[in-house]
Length: 437
Image (cartoon, rainbow, N blue to C red; front, side, top):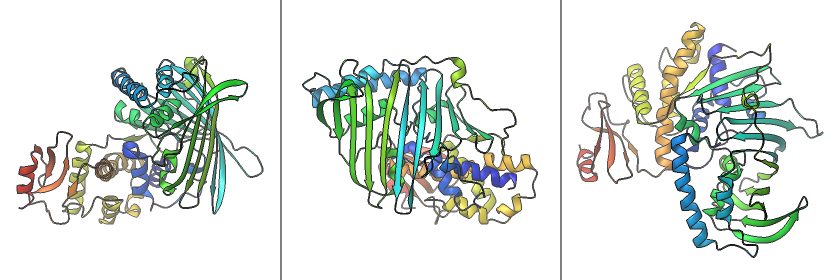
């Protein structure tokens, strides 16, 4: 493939199956925007990479916020969940988890579709200070394991590094700031996320049992709205028909021993996942989370840079699109902006192939990413129910004082981007008058 194609395909393959809410921020929107690019002849990265979409990386500042959230969660748990016969409350488990800074666990996943299925095994090592390493292997129907892939999430560098041993390749992805990295909480069944989500949904006690020789207390939720752990990966595959999540906790340590997840979608897809072999307070050496790229491995593209998908990126995307097309995108839904941009003469994929490699890379990071970010930002507003509205089908570049894009803020006021791409916060009454123009 040409370098530009490599870049687009690899960015596409960085997609993880999306979660609800803003955790789609990078991967889901990039994939939607690029899924009409020519597919690589190689096996899709989707088939061999770990799911890294929602792993928590807390900075010093966010730890303070997280601590406050835990206090609130514990209070909720104490009010609505009074504990079981053993005296364990789910909120107590969450509080205990917050005291653990290093741990590891393993996850075995089976996905069954009408067209077939797949099986995976992953090992996750987490240090709240240093980062995360995920090693994933696929298992074929004959029980043969694939070559592993390693993913390193590095909060200090705001970077994710993928190493694919089967292809002997690697890719580095840089994020604009640590808030983006923190928002990609792990679909890899981080127990903190599991407990936090269970606390927010209907759940019940399963009483005591014995798992691997350990006396445990069981907790279960069958709430179809549950969206923790494996559920974040399954969102794109249909609506939930059946949900059964069981968490088994050591009655002595208040720490998880086993997690079982079973989900049935309305599309007929079934998920079964078991997470166990927890090693709490694991010893993590500095080199354990340092990316290892063996000699001879190559990167088919330069480092990929993913910006923060916020108002600034959206305005930049609008400006870049307008500069090329002489108009604003007609619609911001789905992949409309990037598809329409590629139809503009001189911006087709074929037109880029003749450019030098460094210029192709520059255009991907400096042009395509902001336009992708524009669509991602709008979809996030929709998901967050911020009452967004976009008028690119009627507002032109000369309509400088008219509303191009608006959304509601938390204080009930509205943020408005005008036709001249200036932005302003206004009251809802003023917005009503502006939208009449």
